[in-house]
Length: 206
Image (cartoon, rainbow, N blue to C red):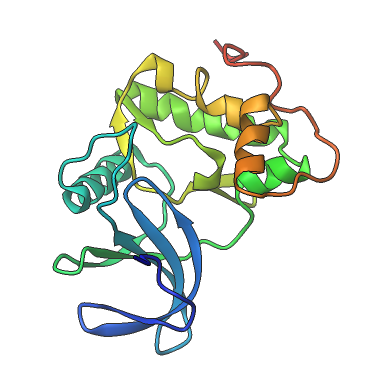
């Protein structure tokens, strides 16, 4: 049975129609679409799904998203603003944040030391609040000198899943990243700057 919506499909959020432009990605908890409102403004619509995930156990996914958004807002993590929530349809409408993802920069060999240091600055706030986020590079959009976390997921801090011990493995062309790119048919091009190659324990500021 087909789950993802096609381009041109209309999806409503509390009675307001949004035209699907394209699928942005599928995560553990939902499908995220680039959509256009009746005025032509681009937004992101996340449709919660209930497909099984072998490595993650969920409770109420929509309630978790809303709770996580409040948590990360209190920690001052830069995220797209939540615009609307349709609880009956399990849909969340967000701001669209334009720009390349860190994953796209990794594929192009263009991750810079400044990107890593910006992520570590975010981590200092997260760890102080006993919190982890999903550090996979598809979840971060680069805007100027900043990083915007375009997911809302967060969890209680565990060292094995923090940036230095897990996330950084995917912020350069490591075997793990290359395997992921091959599995998803994503082309690696350009020369790798090697900016994230210090390894998981390489936080120079500690």
